[in-house]
Length: 433
Image (cartoon, rainbow, N blue to C red):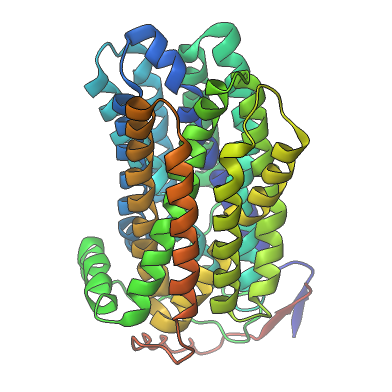
């Protein structure tokens, strides 16, 4: 038996982490651009938020098709093309003069690009490369999103303040281009390409042959999953998850804090702290997902999130008070903790189609986020503050806890795809941790 010190799955996970860091950083940018664009062009916040909503919606709708495209054309090609789209969309914004151009650049191009590196990408990598420690690795890769926000948001806020929003947009474009060669060079497709089993496996299982087009596979997985109760419970809860994170807090926390006299750089720093605690929350949730029923975890996460949002309006002030810092820590721990158990439940209920089905569940997440991004902008324009938006989000989160607890433990509701036979003459491999 041949023994290696480290399974190549860990290298693939590391490169995926870097790509996810970049994608998350690019997605975090609109929150520091709302007021600068409003000040320069005079566009209402609801109009600018609509571009963010298009971004969020495409970010979600792209995910299931991206997962199917990765199965058909490979991870490297899809991720490299996605990074090029982000660079193009962000770079072109420096030439815009009308709000529809913002929708096309930041909404459509960046939305399509970041959506191709969304959480369905995480499900694809973990599903192909890991059998043991899937929950933990899902948590680590999900934490990449938090790390991207942590790295980019304070830097972008300073760039916007000192050099204008165009400089920040060009930095995002340059960062996306810088990741392209890394992804094209180091991302691997399947462990079978190296003659290896997945991490924790004992047999080399070649990838199943591609059947039909990527779009047909994605739509077919949706059609089958949509006939099941677990899909709608998971999608409904995740739609509320998106509304209360990316759509509301991720997009409107900075301008809401600014409404109460807080400097935008300070508010952006607080949102970046959410990203710091996201990392810890994702890792802890991934570890728990390998040990605790995901249905129970989701119920607890959503209920705690709802309670925190109901008290948030009373915490805003001109400075970062201790009570606000407590909220930031708590909300950060909870923000992406929902991802590892949701991925695990999609795999449990939908078998080999779990990654693509999770892409559709994630599309529901972004649909909720898109509604919240525009809805909160309308609330602010009509009422003069965001208080109603926070209260509605809190109540919805408590409702998501109820949806999660309605899920029942059972076997896969979609039949698994039978693995291809192991090629003759393959050796058995094993690895250290």
